[in-house]
Image (cartoon, rainbow, N blue to C red; front, top):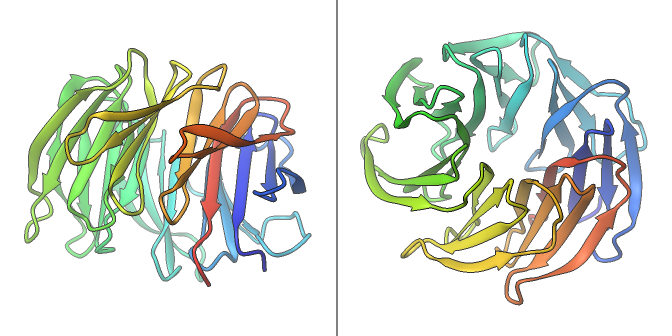
Length: 304
């Protein structure tokens, strides 16, 4: 099995797998009319999830079989968020149908269903594996307690401005939300009470919608991808910009950090995906082959 899995998805309805050092594409999955919004690779690198409209499909990574290994049906709109419990026992999804769902990977059907009453744009799992945090089009952020099976917290940081992306630090201490006005909101989470959000910082990050915000694995950096064609890298001590990555010609939709936090992969409406060396601040590799916008990227370079 390859040590590094790098995949991209595009409005051209394909998923492509890349050899990171050479930039070559070694596998392409034609998904027909299936529109893909997000990609996520399981921790063990066995599967890649493609969240689309309205299903989520799981494909095997280490195979030439391009048919889905599993399909999860139940949402009634675009699936905009997807992720896995760390041991790969279950998957979570969020959708424009206003729900967050949990799926057992070994059993059919949806196991849990949480109603958000607005289209869900983003959902993340707390490192404690016991809470999901969702952000929606109406500007609400909700914490879903998976043990008590309830919404333990709801907050609205900026009125009815749509939340576009959420990210939580690997130690569970910080959470950041971005919105369609280019703002980021940073909170510290309570150690004993994770539904307690202590406001730390409000950042006027971009003059255009932020499409993705993401902590680096070591939590020292925060990346924001924007419709202004740039990616900004912030340090998480003072939340000031340490780099602006210029090179994409159109909206930057998604990004993924390498496990050592030294590299970032981005996907853009300019049809390209780029690999950035964050020490240099330059794109060191360009992955070209899609014929429409690259709106989702996934990277898993965890050691075996």
